[in-house]
Each structure stands twice: as structure tokens, then as C-alpha cells.
Image (cartoon, rainbow, N blue to C red):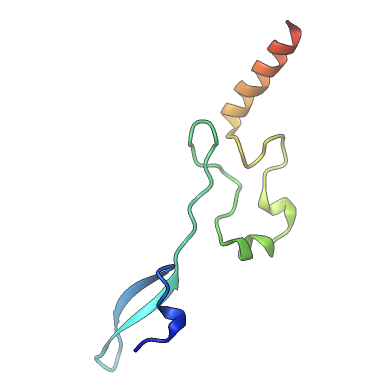
Length: 91
């Protein structure tokens, strides 16, 4: 029986043939999904992909993009949103 820590479905399984001729299962953490824009769903550049633990260990400037709504909207959606807000204020 496999150890308890490997029974979790949060691990990916891969069958591997080892040099001794046996077939064994290698366990790996699943990759987290990429960050996407809240409005259009496009992939966001400059935002690292990793588990919360990995993301927490890097500096704050590397975690997000340094602009308003950075890491939430893609640049094109942000441009539309800012234009809309400026125009709405004028009226």
C-alpha cells in the first residue's frame, strides 16, 4: 500500500519504467492554473504561476504588475475601463 501522503488526488500520477525493469508510479504536484483577465478571460502576462506557498516566497514586485488593477485586468481591458471612468466623470 502506498503512503498516505500520496493518496491525495491533488497529486498527478505518472507510470515510469525504472532501470531495474519495474513499473513504478511517480507523484508530482499539479500545476496551478494561469491567471486570467477578469473581464475578457485573456492570459495575464507578468504574473507567476505557482502554489500559494511558492508565490508567497517571492518579492511583492515580482508577484504582480505595478499599475492600477495590475494582475486583475489585461492592459486592453484596463484601457477601456479607465476611458469609461474618465468619460463618466465628465458628465
